[in-house]
Image 1 (cartoon, rainbow, N blue to C red):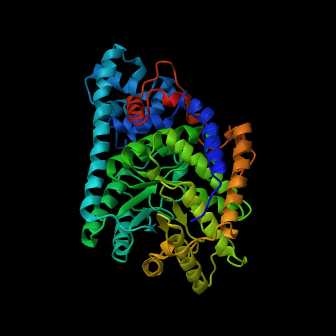
Image 2 (image 1 turned 90 degrees about the vertical axis):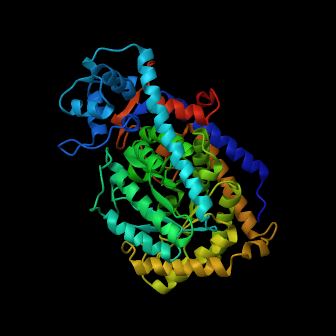
Image 3 (image 1 turned 180 degrees about the vertical axis):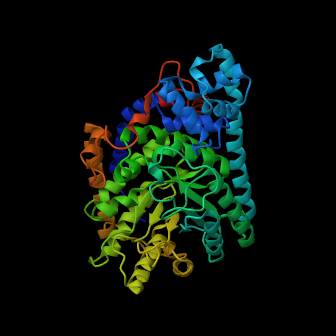
Length: 521
């Protein structure tokens, strides 16, 4: 479609790899509260105590207070289970009743390792089994044409969400995203069980995942196509939610290396550690990550700072590859967010969308609708969404989050979603083959603009490589938002690994995804 400067492309990809290397070294020497809770969950620790505290939190908070998490929660849980001759869930209940795991006599390391090997294999077997089930359903039901029509449900009640999701499927939706309750990303725990109250969305929990997955499988069979399920693996419980998704058959997870830092003020060290393990889980489970670059354009100008979106996409790609993720599972984010009153704004949009599509030819980009400049004039808004849908067809996008006529006014009503799907169904059908019939002018304005943004992204990446990613974030280089490296929420949950650190789930997944020694680069 357009010709990008090959030298610029290669330089940007190399710089992104250079930028993440010191971060990866930091990641390998640290763990977090959420990573340790994930290990406990993979061992079968679940439920909540009489005070409503999830048992994974009971277990890990106890070890944190004893200042022994640097050895890994798996070690202490396994040792306790062997000595007490009980299952991890029973051990968690005992801890809630006052058992001190550090007072239990220590078993020989080989016995602990043998005990944990069985749990690690069972956890991975379940991930692979769920992955195989998805592949079989895709084969049996069929994979919808691109762009996938992605809509949201956000009632706060998981049972109401399932009804709205089923209605959306009957109107043509291919992807259902269950929006999380406001500020769940700031919670240091995952709610247990099905939830029926939430503000601006529905709580992410393992039971809610199970309920919606079952509902979409039923709807997919009726509709004759596979329906994908989306939730959020971001915030202070990023690895835990990825773990739950890997066991409950989710297809997409919003999972970004910097989103939580910039837009939720979560400590950057915590986020950068957590994203690695969460992405390894996604990579093994074949869950497509959706990154959050579209949010940059809500705080920055979409023309002036387009290059920051591209630079972030390249960094997200590098982090994902470092976690063993295949490119086809990288839903790199971008958005249709240029002021509609700017002359040739649609040409800018095409240039930016083509840049993303061609810079990451094997990825599955997620294209976000106009939000910043949506208007109370719903007729104009409907046209803006039509232009957005046309841009997707012209540039070959993969995932299309459909724009709503009442964007940012309230959570979508059934009729809002119906109008959005009607718009997309018409554009995607009537212009399906347009991309193959149209050539972008060689050396023309669109091609020049794409290369201009790429060159600007190169400059930002060069600066970031020079000062380091953490310093660049402190400087506000991304989304015009500055965050201190030792500020934000969750820093106290960052723990230095001891030489004896034990996490068989982390180690086994990493060894399955990465060549020997690759994670030490």
